[in-house]
Length: 155
Image 1 (cartoon, one colour):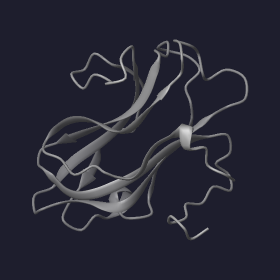
Image 2 (tube, rainbow, N blue to C red):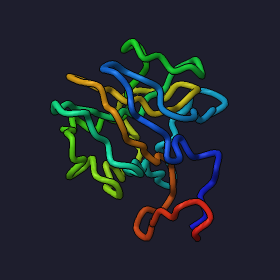
Image 3 (cartoon, helix red, strand yellow):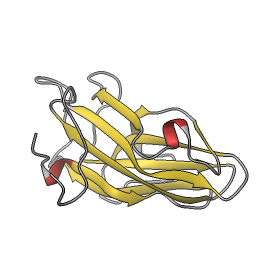
């Protein structure tokens, strides 16, 4: 599979941040508000590139596929959320879903529910404590069954 750069939100993009909500990586301009879940399914894939860790205290992160009328997708709760990973525990070790190589999501884009606005992106919600390290890959693809991540220049 060849990954289309225009369908990529994050490529080893840092998620280290203080508690709060942040727009991660790039946004996809859909050109207009539209339903992108109809027809041939598109899948959202979010993978941990570098372990997501906190300095000492346990914290949480979650990722949301969100759209907005503005390219600077709102982080104040007014963006339209289409998918939410749910809360993922973090810690000093970066284990489970926060370990390097873990796949946090590989889901078909929702076809029902909230209408997609013009710009589509990934929000990271960090809670409880500062995330001191971590990076993700996030993108849209038509086929996740044989999907595999390769480091830049190693494929």
